[in-house]
Amino acid sequence: MTDDHGRPSRMTRTLPAALAAVAALFVATPAAPLRAQTFDVEEATIAEVHAAFLSGNLTCVGLVQAYLARIDAYDQRGPELNTIATLNPRALQEAAELDDALASDGLAGPLHCIPVLLKDQVETSDMRTTYGSVLFEDFVPARDATIVTRMKDAGALILAKTNMGEYASRYVGSGFGVIRNAYDPLRNPSGSSGGTSVGIAANFGMVGIGEDTGGSIRGPAAVASLVGLRPTLELVSRFGLMPANPTTDTQGPITRSVMDAAILLGVIAGYDPNDPVTARAVGRLPDSYEGGLGADGLEGARIGVIRDAMDESVDPDSEGFRQVRARIDAAVADLRRLGAEVVDGVDIAGIETVNPVFGSNVYETEEATDAYLSEHANAPYKTLRSILLSGRVTPWRAAGLANSLGKSTSDPGYLDYLLGRDRIRRDVLVAMAEHDLDALVYATFDHPVTLIAQDAETNPSPADRYGLGDNRLLSPITGFPALTVPAGFTPEGLPVGLEFLGRPFAEAMLLRFGYAFEQGTGYRRPPQSAPPLGGGQ
Image (cartoon, rainbow, N blue to C red):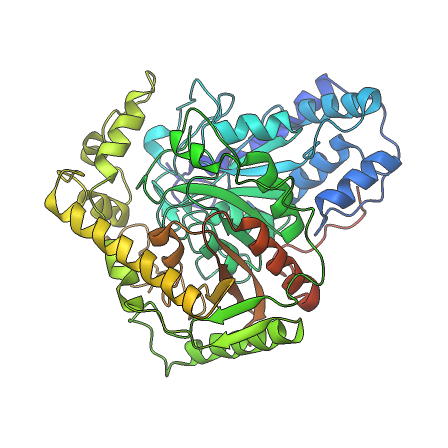
């Protein structure tokens, strides 16, 4: 089957009909008459939206309508960024209910009517959860993920589920095809949370949730001029999240501002008995993550700069490497200007082993996937092997997953991985101790994001140089938190991310550093591919 343009039909091609259905639903259940609104949603923050609600300059319905209009204009038409997997069919009805709640009781919580773009790896009981795969196109779980429950309890509105790399890797899947970078639709958006990052960058929602096994929050955020936080492994519950490698899987905020990331983290963080590892978070959460943010947050901080490339395939003489290095040099100068004590060129023993050690872990995926699918009576597939035997998984993802078949955490090679991981963790802590460092910084990628290969959907080894210059793996291999923030643009207009890494449960400090950097530099700017529609809301 093909669409109107002769392309293979995708699940996302139903979005115009979905938009019409949402509009029809609103007509059937109208809220109170809307007053004229002049609020511009582009680049709006949680605080600005809440102030507009309280002043009467904006309603929840008006806010949601604005985002739906932008999705309609730019996600399927125009540059066809292909970020949205499923729209919430009750979005406008839920918005009307939140407007009623505001009128009677005030804000329902810290995320009152904050439209969330949720990676389609996270379970929702009222919308399908596809994992980027055509095999799960009709799968609706019987439960909500813990973070979904917590966001809704805080007043959030799940606006849409976002496209993702199939089964949490890269930027293409059998369910929805290729996700495109908002700053250059010919280039990839990183992965696998590319749908969330592109949607937030293009102002299709207010805040987003990504999942990060080996960089899938911070990579997509970095190449979209966004803030992305990978929390300490034990801080945020994974209950209701399809696993990849449980010893590195986590989820966290993708936002346009550090303040919004802090607010969102405060809602989703904390102990959950359904994910016992989060018991370690008890007593380690601040009263609030946003309370300590200020423009002076870098004054007196000791920051170490990692200059060694963790991806040995990147060419330090290439133009792309030099462009990123120029931006990182400028960012380091910014850190000094903003009051940080910078230790440049910190050496970490064995830094060159980070990527290969992480890549050696093929032992957790099959066991974890099979256990997860067994929890769902209505799951169309119950094992990783049956998923691959379907023959419908995108070739590059099928090739990667096939490497995990027949492997288990009882294999001797798994011990080698664990020993390598613990050695890296020790060496990072030693380097930070010897230099008396609060945090380390480095480029999220040492090279600008690369072009999408013509055969990305059909070739098991597409020549796209995906992930070139990848420095994201230091955080998951250690289990330490990391925050990427915008660090400007290359001469071609491609975003560069600066990443802060700290010790376990140092999120409040990293957010403080990131906020001061953000406020002191102002590097974030929206993509030209999705300009304001005009007219306000």
